[in-house]
Amino acid sequence: MERAIEVLHDDEQVLVVHKPPGLLSVPTPNAEGDDLVAALARQGQAVIAVHRLDREVSGAVIFARDAATRDQLEELFRAHAVKKTYWALAQGRFQDKHGVYKWPILEDGANARISAQGKPSETRWSVLASYRHATELQIDLITGRRNQIRLHFAHAGHPLAGERKYAYGRDSQVRIKSRRVALHAWHVEFPHPRTHANLAIECPLPDDLMELRAHLADA
Image 1 (spheres, rainbow, N blue to C red):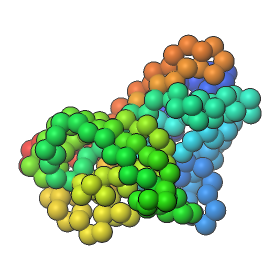
Image 2: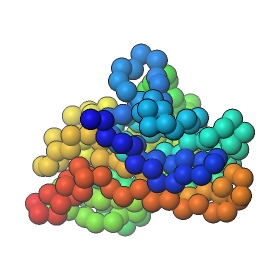
Image 3: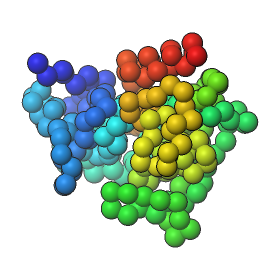
Image 4: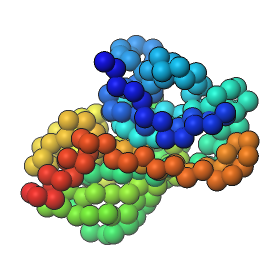
């Protein structure tokens, strides 16, 4: 039996749900597998995509109920009025308790890379907990380039646990492996496009990341 997608917020204009890992956010050319839009349709939820998360990444995804709301939400994203906070587990230990990465990112189809010819990108981070071989982080995404968090931390020498696209073999440095990239969109905050009331929505860590964190704490 198909597992129902968890709804975090639901009104006449906006739907926010918890995307599980392994599910595409939207139908994607040349990418096989189910997607979140189709899964919601099977639950009787008709939505329009506004943004997306990588297939491996879990967490809060915002949808519009109609085209006018989609346009308003997209404008909020362009104005950086949508605050997106992530939980992540990165390889190694950090000397500082907080910092910011600003390497420009060049998007190339389904891939991306750090390049002087890329677009300005900003990722702010702070340490939540330090373990022997890894660091638990809170990440505030200021810009939203393709694979931005994964790229920035890999470039800094701290690829996320479970990273196989950008880690270049450095995943072996982590004693406890992750079956998928250890990244979760755990909090979104934005003004409602119609009422303008502030919406602050939290998406708790899924079981697999809770288990990963527990194993690291015991290591």
